[in-house]
Image 1 (cartoon, helix red, strand yellow):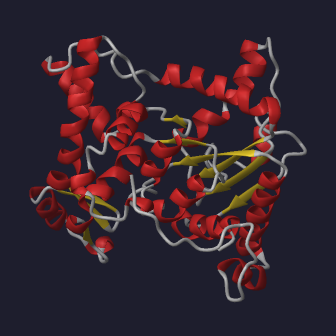
Image 2 (tube, one colour):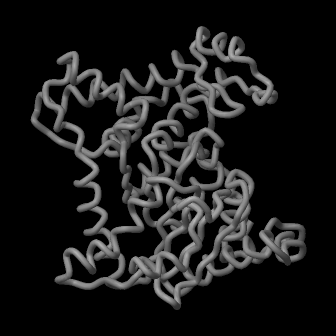
Length: 339
């Protein structure tokens, strides 16, 4: 599905002088920088012990092109499952097929309401400093996905949101539109690996809105064609049981919100509500977030609060990096990969 690329040295290779990992070891010794280093080292130690890792993606990490490092993490088996918002699921593909038509707005903080309205009239949907071109990104993906939804509805088949996109990628339906190296798409890497994926609240995404609209208009005859969030939780429970049977399972959370809140709850759900087959708590926890512990913020809560809910244990290594995930996550991934 993609041409071979020359990658930086793997974790098993000696780290070269001047590498990102050595730079972090040399300079990142205090405060948030030290936590970044500690979290990366603990991630590596977790994998070295045979552990598995779930990564959760909130915010607009796909539009921030996290795929350039995350895709390699997937290919190198440094991540074993992903929970993400529907927006991150689709925006990686938007970038794949329309990158040259994106517009960057470096002075986005200074835009007037009229300037924003002008972007809307040009069908440029702004995500902070980046505008997604509706016609070239959303509509290209929409056409292929709607065809799959209609076909599945007619056959009385049902699939999860990510399964429809995986099928489109595996069938090379978007290849003619590729505008970046597909090796930089984390969704392409995930599809190749059939990576376990969980997408809570998918209906909140652009494609989720489009699916609802097509059900309203009658173009899609069965609104059950796309499987639900409850079914995602059941599938997540089955995955966690399998993964935790032979390995410890870690949790690497980028941002807050439903992408993290949903999957971390699978442990207390199994232990307190299902009860029959107890599972161990998450055995590693790291969150990159700029949220603060105030006003009842769950995203800003310190990890120890999760002990009271049965999500983490006293022994779980816990890290909070209070910083910008677009800066921090690629650095941690680079160190884990041995770059």
